[in-house]
Amino acid sequence: MAHLLLRGEPIGPSSQPIQAVLFDKDGTLSVSEPMLHALAQARVFHALRLLQERHPEMAQEALADCDALLHRAYGLGEDGVDPAGTTAVASRQHNLISTATTLAQVGLGWPEALSLAEAVFAATDALHGLGSAHKPVATEGLHDLVEHLAAAGLRCAVISNDEEAGIEAFLRSQGIDQHFQACWSAEHTPRKPDPGAVHALCHALGVPPDACALIGDANSDLRMARAAGVPVVLGYTAAWSQPPPLDPSFPRLQHWRELRLAP
Image (cartoon, rainbow, N blue to C red; front, side, top):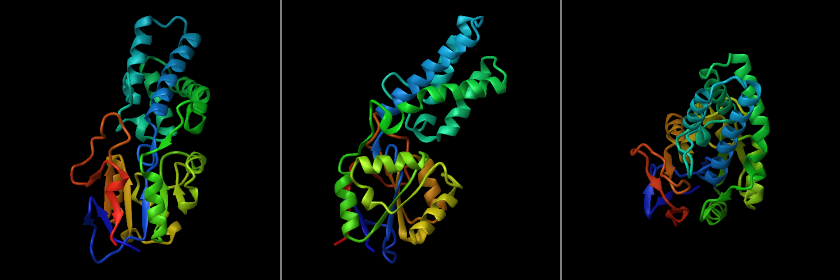
């Protein structure tokens, strides 16, 4: 158990030491934007390709509309993705539904739109995670922080909308899997941002929510933690080309060295 310091100042209630730290994955533990940008671009490409193959009669104007709608749905820009958009924050299933909804907006019936979206994702799933040419890397200073936490006896866990295999593969690839005792993924129920996801993960860790800290890069994560009764909730901002638009009521950190344990 320990008290956390943010830039040398205590955070959280002085009467309640922290026993565990819960981390979001993409955009917090990992620099995922290059991978997610390439993934979103590939999804747009394959959606338009399949749409043209299956509907050669579709007007170019409708295809251009679909292109623009998909960019907006994915939060896809020229050089990156919106850190608050679906590609950055939502699960694969939610991104698939948003793709099908976009296809329905250009005239496809829902069964066909959903089928085409599933084909798009089947064609691009290999570009996600460690299969991507833009493999996610750990955010700067993460290794030192988790070793610091582990040496003090704190438990660490991941709460993410990635699948469990993707979470575990990332931790192994960075050589930090031994410092994480649990994870909560998109395959678990309830999934984030339901506060019940925090309660379930804390139960798996054997630590009450009021003895935890949670760190994430999205308002949905931070508000979930607050609603779950987590006393220390921090926004991490350094993993994106444009800073995520976080609620100013949450403290923020730019580098892991800003977070330490009280002596």
